[in-house]
Image (cartoon, rainbow, N blue to C red; front, side, top):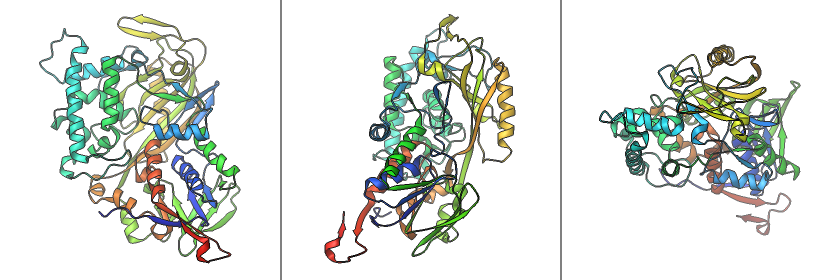
Length: 509
């Protein structure tokens, strides 16, 4: 594919962004920073932020969607410093003894479990038939390190070197035309299975048994793996943080800043019904009272999930229709709730093997206060550090189904949530909010082979349309921001005076 062309856009153009999630909010701010002052942001919900859903309860920010920052989130930190400096990073309590992993095909439901270090080394030991049972887990570290180096070599061989963000298409699709687990087995990398299962599945990207290798390579870059391995070897806590005011505050703050400067206009509860493009595009939407409005604009930015909302464009071309076909997605559910303290409480409890269960079982429970403060008493029970708590405890649970969203999912997932909470002894459950969303829109292997991801990026700006968000890159805020930044760099701003069209009033930047 030829180099991606620059995209000339007049700074006087009126630009409508459909979707006020992280990608839409960031792109609005990025356009305003580049000198565009007629940007309109339409959001169907009552608040900006999309899947970055932060609920403050008990004086603590509870993340229902986007949660963490780690060592590679430099672009997010730059945005925080500029737009939301009081939203500081707090240690997420990801110490080795703060994460308890439960195993077994169905996920064990008792109070016992393994620390992060013991879990990944035990999984590694299970892959080595010659492993002597009396050797401590630390003896697996050299083998895990060698496997990590092999993975990094393969990663560079398949994808080459590239700037952070969306990788280039693989040089040979036959090298990645398999599931992530098949890839690990084929290349004798099963020593990494436990670590990779956590890094992939804890983020809601599905089981290694079903995740496509290409998306695993996208997510677990050499930089990510190097950082993780270094901390494991040195026995240090993971460089993972939570935000004191939550992720939603960041997106709202950046849009609020530019709205205050009259560069961005925001319409909440704006449900888009139809978009028709032309010399002047027309965006038809209804407001919170059901009244219909029509916006005329020069450019449209689709910051919504194109696997679900491509039909909003009534004049979608045949080529565009083909590009936005071949998707699949999953279902993610978070529940914010209160309970009395558990007999054995803990900041993080994880049942990764449950993610393959079609019932949508709870695979993670986070105690927000324990995670952020770590002030609760701890005691030893056998080889495990057990945390105790007093008074009502606020928690966030996470569930996952590896299929597309159905309208009946919220009720089904709530029933399963209650069953799983009873298994860990949770009493007097008070549900504060359930948040169920289609998650991780991604292309099928066939659509990837056809190059849909890279064709979309190449065609940005054609027909007066831009495409951003998780459905054209990857389901996490870092990749959405990186994608936007690279797209903004391709825009050559054109300033043209409507009153005077002389050459003196025309400039390209």
